[in-house]
Amino acid sequence: MLSVEEALALVLAEIKVLPVVQVPLSESFGLVLAQDVVAQENIPPFANSAMDGFALLSKDSRLHAGQPARLRVIGEVAAGYVADRAVETGTAMRIMTGAPVPLGADTVIQIELTRSTEPDWVEILQESVVGNNIRRAGDDIRQGQIVLQRGSEIGVWEISILATLGWATVPVVRRPRVAILATGDEVLDVDEPLRPGTIRNSNSYLLEAAVRRAGAEPHRLGVARDTSESLREKFSEALTYDLILTSGGVSVGEFDLVKNILAEQGEMSFWRINMRPGKPLAFGHIGNIPLLGLPGNPVSSAVTFELFGRPLLRKMLGHTRLQRQQVDVVVVDGISECVMRRHYVRAHVEWHDGHFVAHTTGNQGSHMLTSLLNANALIIVPEGGVKIEAGDTAKAMMLDWPEK
Ligand code: AMP
Ligand code: MG
Image (cartoon, rainbow, N blue to C red; front, top):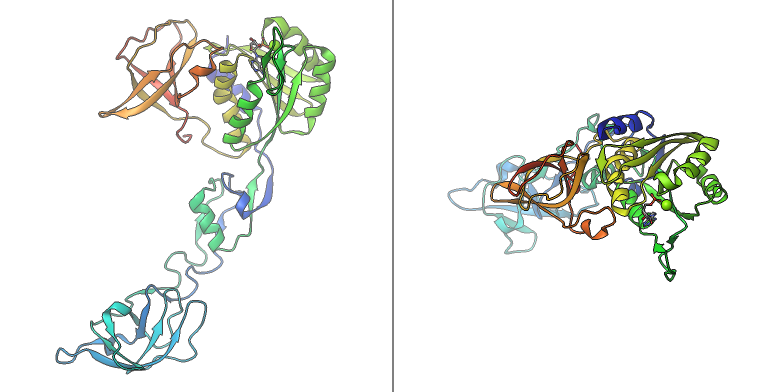
């Protein structure tokens, strides 16, 4: 049996980063930048006012014998316009936040520190030093500066930088398109009434959401029956995608059927992985499209996607951080089952009184979808039948923290 680490290394070794494409700025969120972003201009592009007030010469703002300076108001400049004249000594210009500072002026005093008692005149109630309330050109970003680096993830803040620098489209690693295929004669779609012996397809919907959460684009291709014809047909439909993600059909009973089709159409390894839930896993290629075959049991499918599918997609997306972070947690309720394989136990982890504490989510059977509810972590019980008593410390993989 392979360890989780060995299997993941084998999977990742076969995965290539997808090609670079230009996408509209607003579609770049979450994708990986394929080029350094070098500022072609200063930001702000021009010196502008940080306040509504008056632009003037600093030396004109000094009090004389305790009396405020009195300046003639020669006009005004609003955001989006440029002053039609310069400010000279003895004068001031009304200015709005974001408006370019007029020539001649070297300071801006906010309106609250002025008084206007007669039209076209203003009294300056406090001295305003050079540069006061002026945002200099290039304060934020200097022309020529590398602001964002190739390989970084485009998040909310990065979007604002790209926008301010005028990147209407952004070169990014393309988002993988993922075909999701369920298998099984017993598996019906969600809107079908159950007949004796059938269940509804929960895996495809879970995987669709998990694929989307990983930053990729899911496409459900429905359910393949447990026949060679049905599998062959569905696989041929899946050949235009970047990844084929299947669930079911890799356990002993159907193993041969799926294996035969895959052997006929590509190259595939079937692995038994030293983990629970989720022992059987298939990985290989159909044509040159990678295929990850997850187990059918819903929890196994969910956990193996998190452990193998998500890092795989992140690699395709060009991320360098592929693995979820792990922390030490105190397992409050302990883990009653003791298994020889590495055990991933669904748990809710939170910070409490100076450490992370974990509560398991109840019955851990691989058919128990409800054991996923409220789980934001997987406690990792090492192989070899390690017993975790209440209050013991263990490692947990955090499912709602960013990768490291
Ligand atoms: P298999 O790996 O095909 O032997 O399936 C293992 C278990 O998972 C069986 O109990 C199946 O009924 C169940 N199962 C398989 N596919 C799905 C699916 N798409 N949704 C929910 N349960 C499934
Ligand atoms: Mg099956």
